[in-house]
Length: 108
Image (cartoon, rainbow, N blue to C red; front, side, top):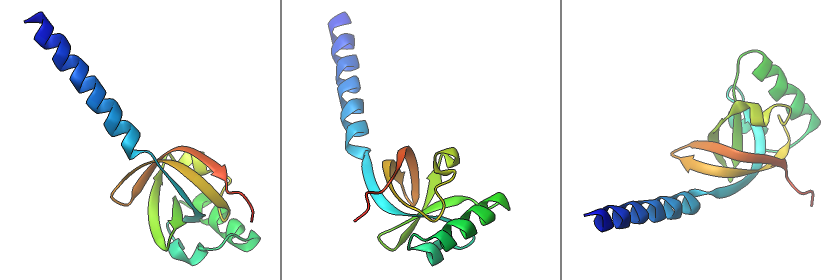
């Protein structure tokens, strides 16, 4: 009986680790806000000022990547990144990315 429980626990742990590892992805895009959305699909100083103003007024940060708009959490990781190109690593569920890290995107 104990052997079966140990095997079951080990199997569940392994499956959980594989699922967690498979879900981690990376996106490159521009940080916009929930009010302007896709309007800020290109990084610029003007977009940065607009996004930060909208977020200060109650908007939320979002990510524009590949022509799609993603909700992002936790919001604190995106603070000061409005209107800038970033690389986000995390997990996605539907249109929501839960970010593990947010870094400035490499310049080309």
